[in-house]
Amino acid sequence: MTDLVFLTSEDVTGLATAADYVDAVREAYRQRGQGAPAEPRTALFRSEPGGLFTSYTALLPETGAMGGYMYSAGFGAKDAWFMTPLFDADSGEPLALLDGAHMNPFKTGAAGAVAVDALARTDARTLAVIGTGPQARGQLQTTATVRDFETVRVFSPTKSNRTAFAADFDDRLEADVVAVDSSAAAVENADVVITATTATEPVFDGSLLEPGTHVTAMGQYHPKKRELDTTTIERATYVPDLRERATSDAGSFLAALEAGVVDTDHIHAELGEVVAGEHPGRTSDDEITVFDSGGTGIETVAAAAMLYERAVEQGLGTTLSLSPASEALTGERP
Image (tube, rainbow, N blue to C red):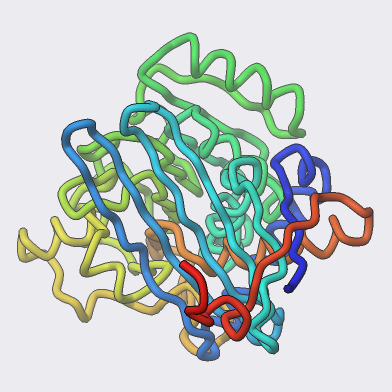
């Protein structure tokens, strides 16, 4: 038998700051850029009852961990459940099973923050956030650790949501956080734009982007759904989290491909290749850049490994036992 640790969301709450997540995820993407294996999302859909079942994996040799994410959303429960198995990348033994709900916005936000750090102008001071849900909150908390924003403009179609979001973060950040009445008002003259929505159609007009803007889009990972229009993709240096994902479930890029405004050569590099220095990121102050984030095992394993190590140090979690195959696959009893 082998012991592993089960960590609830309550166990891992408070173990890491937003900046800690960013540091761990940046290191993981560097490993990916130097060849660490990662597979894009596999998504299974059901129409009745409507739901999504999805998973993805990564192996980070220098971190010494491997694992991924498996979750369901919708179905009869009309909710989401996140499970993160973590294994030792050297021995192959299981280390932990995490309830991934708490870390989800932070590890996904950290990937966006790493992209902003790698692709946005160093003097970026104005941030637009479109969306006000948990993922938008995670994106803002992490991205605020990599640039000294002076102004944050937030838009959501629901006035009460954007007003509450702005009021909350205006108290928490040094930046002036304000709610605006349209996505156009948020995007106008912004240095960085983050989209974190459930929209199925573009949430702003790409012609509004000023030269030098960076865009992080993280709300969609479906071939027929998109947050960015073809104008944005066409104008931008396009960087996905995984190159393979760009032509499978990155709806914004696929729509631009179908429209004929770009081809596959428009994929500049993966984020990891930029972080590792294998490909350049921004090459001029006038360049528009896009990071298309659909979620990978890279940030998941990085975050889970960090939380696991800190939880063990503090004696947190519940011990579970798992039988290795050499003991369990005997076939002696039904």
